[in-house]
Length: 208
Image (cartoon, rainbow, N blue to C red; front, side, top):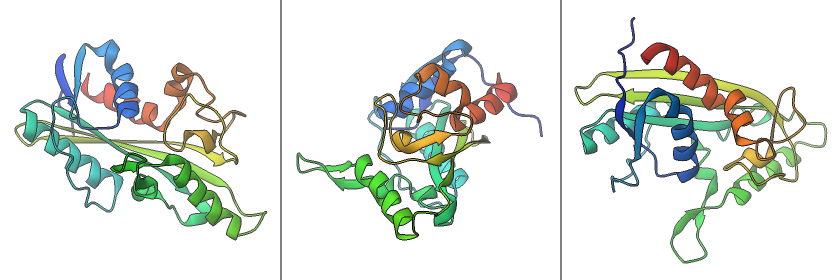
């Protein structure tokens, strides 16, 4: 099936995650897209009821285009750990849910990384630490058309967390062929090898 071309102009990134929005905006900058986030537009976060990355990405993209009347791009991504049968997977963000210090809901990524490490530790010192990040991108148009693109990057988990340049689980993920975590790698270099970069390469080849 031939993908629909995406014309330069305004595009909604259907996310309320500043780190993710910044990373996606950097990847789209060369293609003439004027990016605005769902958070900036005050759009509500839809309930992610899907059981796959693709289902959740489409839920977010369709909510973004419905709320804005513009083409919307959503990303659903997560960490999949081999020894945990692919967990946390689509529940990657849920593992970070916590009560923020100010008394409101928030995400505690150090807690989430600790949960993963704790479950691996339960399996003993020789457990397989292989993991991959998966990313699914969904583009949705106001007329109901949609496109989906998938990417991934393989690596292994380390402990304790290292680095301050990334977000989410980046401080414990070392991509294959590298000795530093995603949070220790310069963002431009990370963009070139990440799961999001893999998915974006497919999206860009198809729609630009």
